[in-house]
Length: 110
Image: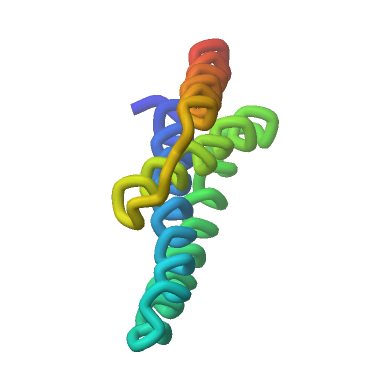
């Protein structure tokens, strides 16, 4: 696996973990009985996000890694829609598509 592929994989894992962490923090406000559990899991995932992103920076320039990390916005939308049943407007889905397309262009031309 090339360094760019490994770095891209680490950034992608970082965005998935960050999106889930953000979703769990929101869940902590919706499920007050288990708030401590959701906050603990959310913070643990955000710490793991730092590990993945820092690892990605070993293999990628910041000018490549940072735009790819923008996928975390799209991931948060998908997870909040799927796990929290939040309403997502068509305009927001269009934004998700644009984010994914932009990140794909960054990877393709790296």
